[in-house]
Length: 351
Image 1 (cartoon, rainbow, N blue to C red):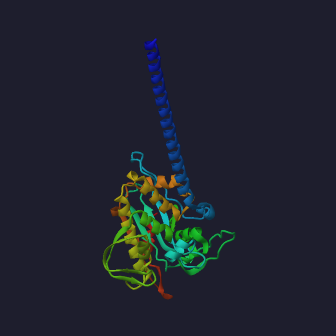
Image 2: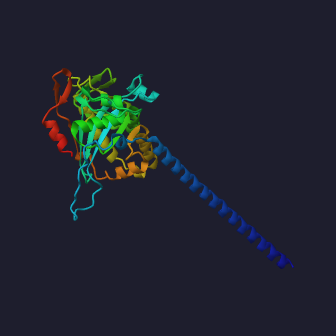
Image 3: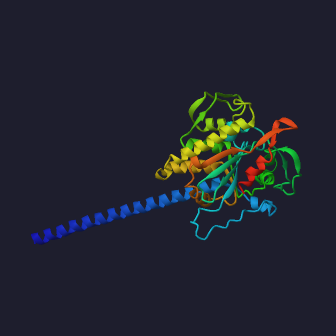
């Protein structure tokens, strides 16, 4: 009996132990399932948040068919597959007044916004080289008739400041004005505001640039000695806006600084393996999308991701920066006009 009872007690211990193991496994399984659900939920929220950051503008629908033609691409059947066709992208930096952060960074306290920076980025079909053409905002142009968001159209205006197109009709009028003056089709549109640019630089850990002369600009509040500097987002934005503290104080000097920044940012991005640091990748993605406005061809995270993947073969050394050739405007020494035929030849090279 004793042995029998002992045997029964032993089986009871084993049963209880097995029960405890089963409960432990069940709890571990539930915890793992909970972690997976939480992870998927967090990933889903992050995707939604980044996607929701982006503002899209239907430029194609607004402008219709009265635009420069898209280039006809006829690759050889034996040619290797390329990331895509050649693209021309209008990139604007706007001094938007919306939000306290933009106002703090120099957007001002009045309504509206202007295109503080304008660049046409031409990507070759292989995405291994690019040309960035800066358009001085002080350029006098013929601003075409543009559709108004509320209906109707603006009148054609001669001898108008280039950046008045954005102030008057937003992205749609900015694109139409660039296409009118260049006869080059803009395949995409990207715009980032003051706050978005500063946050992007900070998310990347700052940016290193070298200045050739001392800078002291009362308007941008930037003071730098000539030399190499590592700038945070606010300082980099101030550098991009500086004009009165360098050269002759014109927009051409500021464009030179902006082109330095473009190269420096490309080098900073290339130096970081963001895919191995998900937290930093999210911060950069959040900064990029937070102040971003695009055409409807790039207004989702999936579309931006595919576009970014097509640029993996593009390095800072393969990016050429130039300024649209200009001369002083006969009607106003403080303004410039396109220098012909040089400007026309430059735009023809990008078609």
